Length: 265
Image 1: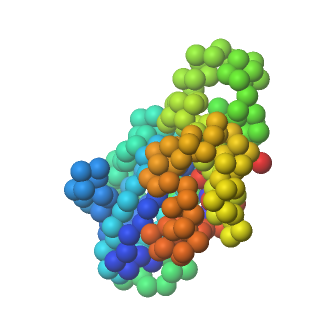
Image 2: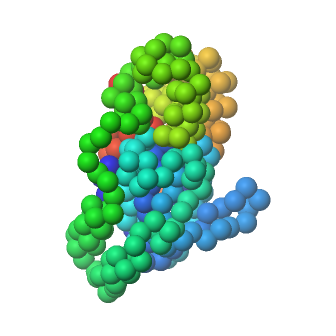
Image 3: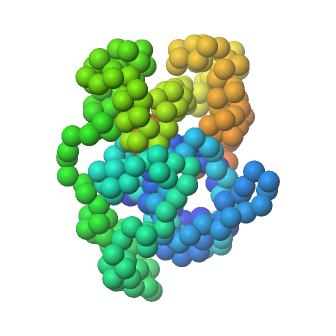
């Protein structure tokens, strides 16, 4: 996906669950992830984060600059040789994935570099060198191509892909890092968000949005938002429309945002 450059000056960020693995580099500064017990875990400087079914709250240092890129859901194995299931809800530092000399040379090239365009160019060149970005057949690529069928019954999906139901479930978990059920939960969440944050949406519209996007009812949508975004739908809408800086991720380009959740058009 597109390279994302963000300057985070001593602020916080609330990030939703996502199927997209991401490669993230702190060019300067750093961040700490807030744990469930309110303790904090310092983030490594350069790492590959796996897909996650849990929201994250991150605290960034003053004068932090990050450069990151998300891999499309299901494409981690082709890009890196890793199964998404092996790093789901976790991460691996880049020194475990990349030749040490290449990594050192890249990081040295960023020393004292101030121009954003130059930083992005160096980051992109490094990714093109270390990742497999050629088009190939895989279950992840097949799911992206057949994304409109994501809510088909399991039997129909296995027939479509020409494999057994158990094999399909296993291959989905290897490719996406989560079960087919959770893939569907993430997709449903991503589908509902654009309608939820429209300026003219009223409280009474939430029930209709829930029904239109595959939830059983508004209570079902409420529970899933708490689990995937860490906040109820109505409160999330207020945060986004109120320009709360912690929710900046929800205001990136529409297609890039949809792709975080394996968009179903």
